[in-house]
Image (cartoon, rainbow, N blue to C red; front, side):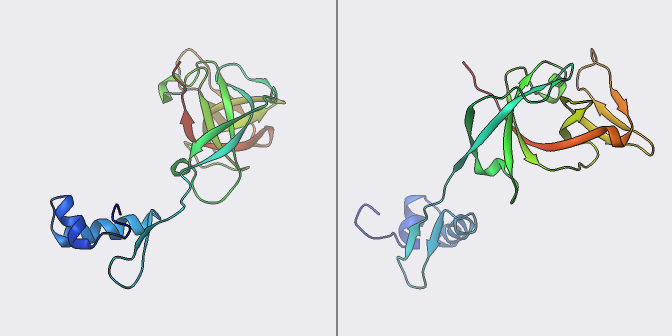
Length: 179
């Protein structure tokens, strides 16, 4: 591209010390991922304006320990890599407060990225509201009750009737800011 036009497949192969077929396969992969567009003729490769991240609102704090009152509002936003977001939907972040999820590598001060949804699959990590308090736990639905399981043996599993648990989101990612 330094010459004002796109490189040929042979140019790419020569530069990266690979076969033209190898270069072709890499271009196909880059196109599938949305990084480049290719036209019909030679030297028609162009970069796309693909966004690498999006801004997600931080809705508040969530307890990873004893449940806390519903969202302590935080006026923050956080940049999230697009790869972390799975498909369409509404996403938000919550700042973790506590250590009940440390064996799932979720630490105090981390931001958990949540997909807004009101149901969850067994074993997923969810933001759940029980008696107007919010907590981050692993979700298990049994025949007659729900278990909200901490990932730290110092904490007890919350067991309650399904109608007393309200799921507000499923965890899809985590961001840790190292200071």
